[in-house]
Length: 189
Image (cartoon, rainbow, N blue to C red):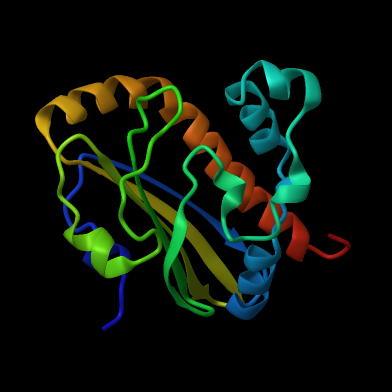
């Protein structure tokens, strides 16, 4: 059974999609995506510093803890890999109370697509995100989609307010990721 974005979260409350054409074959783009370091993401680092509070305002973000695309790059979401089909797609997921000052996570095995797909306890938000690489001529269309499903009406209302504030930053992070990968595959990048 192949776990895809559509299988993990076929219905959702919120959705965000971004893409960029990159002048390199999917295999090269995949390699650079998996090798991406948070230190290569200036916009993302800035947003992490702001969201991290006073400690990161003074000390900065510890980029040493962020090794490659285990996707800790998106620390505010802390997703775990659910499925990968190199060099075509990687799917990440997380369940949390994002509207809390410090997002709590339920006692469910993180990174387990089966547990994720069947989780429906009230009070939580389920998030999936993918990176899909589609051959396009001699290049690759690298796209990313994020979907959010809230498990009850109260959480849906709270998340809608949160999303109103966070969506712009989320989009900036996605654009930062796409731009960094394009830069890495560019000649001299």
